[in-house]
Length: 544
Ligand code: KIV
Ligand code: ZN
Image (cartoon, rainbow, N blue to C red; front, side):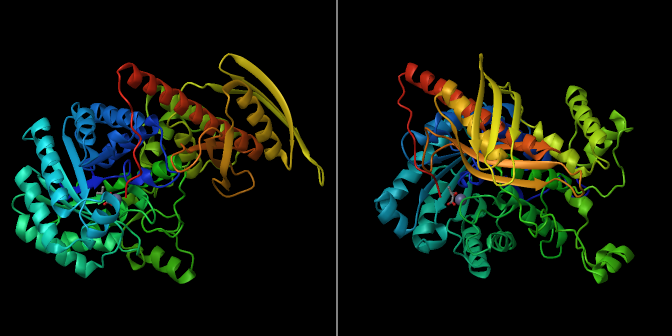
């Protein structure tokens, strides 16, 4: 536990990276990836993991249920609209949870009621009461039942109070105040929260959920805390739709760094796990963290100017308001090279926030030593890239057997790829504008011939993992299946890591294609099961 995380912490951290965060377009995670993130959230010691929105699709239901079943020592939340079918699916997914937390919501502002839901205030109130009471009855007196008034900050205050009163009467134990469109300003938001706390603070925990459209999500969340909110809804790296949600690391470190502003208030978060959480979420979603992002940006603790460097060497407090170690950035000089043993690597991994043992340690060790053969300095970034690369490995449906490419100045490139897809082997040649284009074209043809779809490249990014001529190149691609289009298409992120950038590019594209195939298999299995059970699986629109 972090030196500051106290056992009697009184601020509940509700992490919604896997629900609101995952709604960011293109941030789609597979079930295995969601579980990997949930495990890291447990290490981070958040109080609640909002695992998803079970009614949205069979895959989402499965992810929430699996996280609910496997995650211990933390509450697991599921979201539901106040609409027949949603709360039932959420309750079903949560039944296996040690600490179920049902989160029901309905829009409350006139603009949403009139134009989106096309219902009156009274109808909204009745629906909220009905489904909160349902949840309370279904999950029992010990479960957490949270009610959110969507777009609360643009809702008529008298109606908002009436809605919260009805919610408490129906059995809600948490009242959430979402700033759905990121419209609030801190002092104004603090006052609103204060009014809700004064009126309902004894009957329910008051929660806030702030979006970042004006860049004020963290400020609004902290203002809410100062006015009595005791549950804060956040996402790792501030992930989320549009400009995102309040960022977990900013909120947690804000509270920790300024205790006089938040007297007697603390969270249970193990802040030393923040960097590992940030890296994992960024890696799996493919959403890079901007270098100047507070707390977790690459430059957050870098001092470039001579005056700053001089000050930090004399006393880090001159320019650092928190230590890099407190957020899990390694400050040690422990270096890893060809002659390092497993023990040394295990120690380094622990410093970097990963407790790895047994076969997993052996596999990482083998890769680190292989890298040390071709690269002079194996850096922390190299080691983390190797760990992340293996984070969610599954059985491969698409296996690389070999590739070759020729490319010359001014001419087209010619690539050849040899793949084993399921039981079939395919060798295909293609030309392209450059070596990567030629090889990707060949992969497309091979995959389409066997699977009936081909990967469509939406984004390609390459970066050096560390400095120096022998640096490893990390390629990140985003791909979708040619047979799926539009906002709901599953977009997979693929990574490749090698000192050879063509190798890294091929590996990334194949990793993305592999995830697309796993997603296609999972979806067809779930659909078959649902149809066999006589269900008509519904696809719902994206949430705010
Ligand atoms: O932003 C929002 O209003 C939400 C609710 C579902 C809580 O995400
Ligand atoms: Zn939201």
